Amino acid sequence: MLYKHLLFSLLVFVFFQSCTEKPPNTEIESQKPNILFLIADDWSYPHAGILGDPQVKTPTFDFLATEGALFHHAYTASPSCSPSRASILTGRYPHQNESGGNLWSVFPGQYPTWVNGLEDAGYRCGKARKGWAPGNFTKGGYEHNPAGEHFNTFKEFYAQKEKDTPFSFWFGSSDPHRRYETNTGVKTGMRADLVEVPAFMPDLPCVQNDILDYYFEVERFDRECGQIISFLEERGELENTLIIMTSDNGMPFPRAKANLYDYGTRMPLAMYWKGKIKAGTVVNDFVNFVDFAPSILAAAGLEVAETFSGNNLFQDDGSIAGKERVFLERERHANVRKGDLSYPMRAIRTHEYLYIRNFMPDRWPAGDPTVHRSVGQYGDVDNSISKFLVMNLEDQEGEVDYFGLTFDKRPEEELYKVDDDPFQLNNLASDPAFTDIKKELSRELLDWMKEARDIRATEPQSIYYDTVEYTIEYQFEDYDLAKKIDDYKMLKMDGNMRFMKVECIE
Image (cartoon, rainbow, N blue to C red; front, side, top):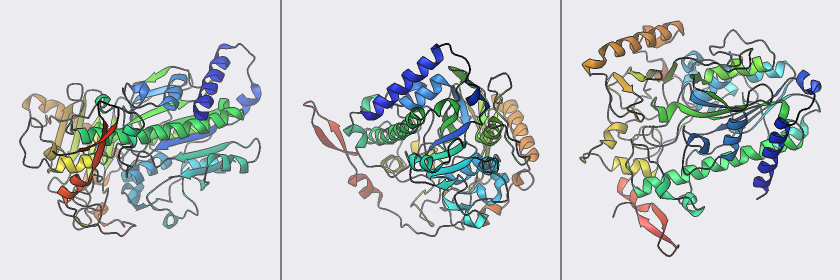
C-alpha cells in the first residue's frame, strides 16, 4: 500500500510539474545528471503492461515509458548474463571483450567502462545486488564490481554520498531469474487463462503456471524500482536523473534465454530524463546494448571513449536515434558440452528478417543430452517444469515439434520473416524464394564481423572460446525426468474459489 501511495504521488508530481508554467531551474540545468540504471535478470519483451501483456502489471516501467521514451526494438548484445552486462559497461560487442564474451568469465579490465568515466569525472558510483556477474572481476584488475562499489540498498548508498555530488547507481535485481517459488503467481491472484504462452512452448497448464511465477518476479522487480524512484522524488533528485530500465537477456524458458531468437535478445527498455527526453517518445529504431555506454557518458557531458563500439542515442535536437538493423551474438553460455565447448552464433535482425549463422552445427545448441559440468541434460536451458515438459515431448508427433525446436541440432543457417513468424518457428533458409534475401543478409553480417574484428569472420571454426577459463567448478548429475515432472504440483482455483493441486501429466 505504501508503494502504491508513493508511486501515485510521483505520478501526480510529474504531471503537475509538466503542466505548470514556471521559469527554468538554472541550477538543475547546470548540474551533471545523475544516472540510475535499473536492470532485471532474464526479462523478455513484451512482458510489461504498456507493451500489451494482459496479465503482468508494471506501473514503474509504464510510468518511465509514458513520461519518457519507450523502445520497441532494444536488443541485448548477447542473451547471456556475463557477456550482456560486460557489453553494457564497456560499450563493446561480446567478441570484442575477449574472455568477457563467455558466461562465468573474467571481466576484461583492459577496457574502460562508463562507470570508470563517471568516477573520473567526480561522480559517486555504486551498485546494489547483481552487477556484472557471474564471473571473476578481480582477475580483470578490479577491487570492486565493475558496475560500482557494493551497497545493500540505494538508501544506504545515498546516505553516504556527499551533498551536491552527482551519482551513478546500478540496481541489479535477481528477478526474474530462476529458481522460482512454485505457485507465487497464482497465489497473488494472477490468472492462467490470461497467459499468452509463446508458440515455441506447449500451451499446457503447468507451463502457464510457470509463466505466472515468472510474472510474479517481474512485478517484484518493477515494484522495487518504483521504490527507488519515489525516494529520488522525495529528495528533489528526480528532475536531474537519467533513468534507464531494462533487462540483461531473455526469459529463462526453452528457446528464449541463451538463444538469438527474439525472446532471448529483444528487451524491454524505457528511459526517463526530465526536460531532455520528451514524454511519450516512442523509438522504433534498433538499439543495441553497446549503445548505453556512449549515451550515458555523452549525457553527462563527458568524452566518449574510443574503445566504444556503440553510438550515442541522444541527438542534439532532443530526439533519440537508433539503427536500421542490429547485430547479435553468443558464445559459451553454461559449461554444458563435453570438452567445455561453446555454441557460437552470430545474427542480423532487421524489421523484416532475422538471419542466424550457427558456426558449429554439429554441436548441441542447448547443451549435451547428458550432463557435462553443470545444470543437467541440455544445460543451456534453465531447469524448470517448462523445460521438463518440452523434454517429455521427445519423439511425440504433433503440429509443432517443441522438442526439436529447443534441443535438436540446427542447420548452419536460419532465416525467419518476423512479421509472419514472430516466434521464429519456420526456417526459410532452404526456401528458394528467399535465396537472394539470405545472401544479402549473410553478406551484411560478414561485413559487420570483419569491421568489428570478429575472429569468426576469418576463423569460423576457432576454438578460442572453448579454451577461455570458466571460473566456477560444479557438477550436476543427470536428473530423473519423470520424477521432476511428478514432483511439480501446481495450484489452481476451483469453482468454489479454493486452491486445488493439479498434476502436470494426468
